[in-house]
Image (tube, rainbow, N blue to C red; front, side, top):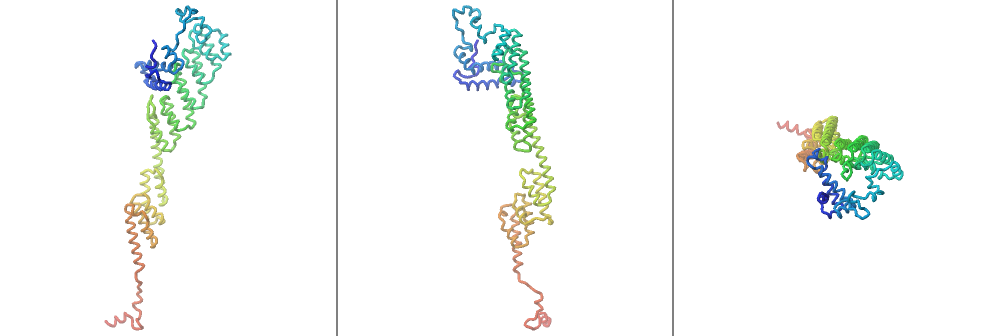
Length: 446
């Protein structure tokens, strides 16, 4: 009984080619045996997958679809005439089909005819003979060998290998030839296409042997190990469930290796969706490797930062460390403490400009105040003190108003000292108007 292919795909009879393809892809992914962990036979998904594939094979072929829409079957009914009186008994007239090679399943070909086919380049004819179970064994083998002598490109070999009813011996030879060619391919995109062909066996052809898919991905793993590839491509491959886990992990590890110390690129890998077998996303092994690399980078930067702080003996050197981007909190704290220690040390040499800059920098409050006070200690002229009192920004930072107040007091004190009257002890003993000194007068009065 003919099946309703439109119902199987869940589409109306008016559906176009795009809708047919979309429905097939959705259902093929849902019922694919690889997504059911070996339980497809018990759950019936394998049979449903076959029905979906058969429906798509017919409806995606314009000629088959036209016959199916018109007659309800892929093969149109044969017109019966009086010249074919035995059609009801034998299904078709032997005499009508004798010169149609595509329907010679009842005929036995000779070696001469095979040689003639090969000479004429009739590769499809040779393939049909090789895939006809009713042909003699030696004829099928001969046809397959002649076919292999003339075919060497991967796509054609894959099509031969997927042909239903292909002679087992020829199938083995085709597979071996393909494996040898795959071993020499250096194009990663070409190998990805071969691997994907494994999932295209539902188009009316047999499934590509798993060895071909594995060989393509093994070669891809080898290429990834010795060449650099686009990071986006590597992440996409690592997240694609169509590939085996071993290859997905290799692609993810290569992306990590190429990222180097770039935290942004590593984070991009880590933030990719995490998946498992049969689902898209970065595998857990890759995610853990990224996390480990990020921790390693952090520890190495912390260690180098702490060593730099320890080796720095000048305020300028510490300030340079504090100005580096993405500085870890531990390193920043250590550098801040070292800077405060240097500021409080009177032997530390530092210019007034540097001190004012430190006071206005985004350091913690204690360090800024210490820098401001140290600047005030070094300011011994009215111009330097005035400069501190007029610095813009002191009023906006915590506790720096204390520095400004202290500077204003020091400036006022300096000005008072400069304007005080001059006194000379010698004036007290100097004679006034040529008479006795003030001291002699005081003594006489006593």
